[in-house]
Image (tube, rainbow, N blue to C red; front, top):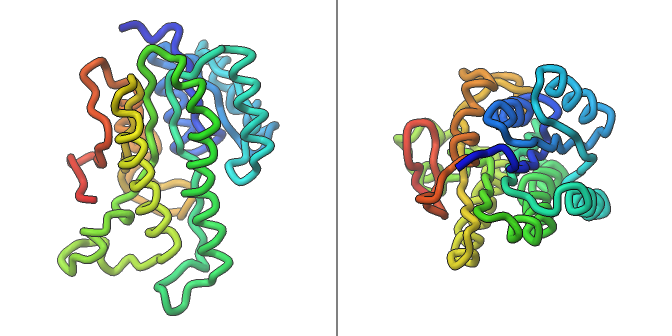
Length: 242
């Protein structure tokens, strides 16, 4: 299957792992749309990819702003008529997040609004475009911190990482993957949760993987072929427990 005419939207893609996902997809022949809250930064990121000979453009999309999501869907419809790949990458971490007894409620709301509700809103808006593609792929950027099993396992390295807002937002994102995968099981749309690993980006400021390394698995799942399986939760080491 050639990727020449496939179109991908990557949210939060003007920097970090989102930009690297966009770059790697474009290197595979996919026309990439850089989704960014800041229109100018999105244009600059797309221009940089274009200067490297890659097919890239940008669209302003703030996942917490419904009007911008609708406008982005209308732009993609007018310019491309369909969407083959949606990578829900946009997300935040708030340092006022904490264990349940002390987390800032405002921080938890911001995180849930962006990481879960924002992803749901974008997915709903883009589904009509994804349905027009011959074999669409949705990749939700997850985290092992969203695993209920790992959160409850004292032997897990994630057990002590208690950020009620962030962890809950990623658990909710996994529920979206499960339910959407079931809802779309009779279609050619495949949806999966992909945890890229502990990537050092502006999200937290620390990590053990580069954005280039972290982008590989999401890109792999964005480019899955005809035998793709929907409704999985994976990380670089393999399947992750829900």
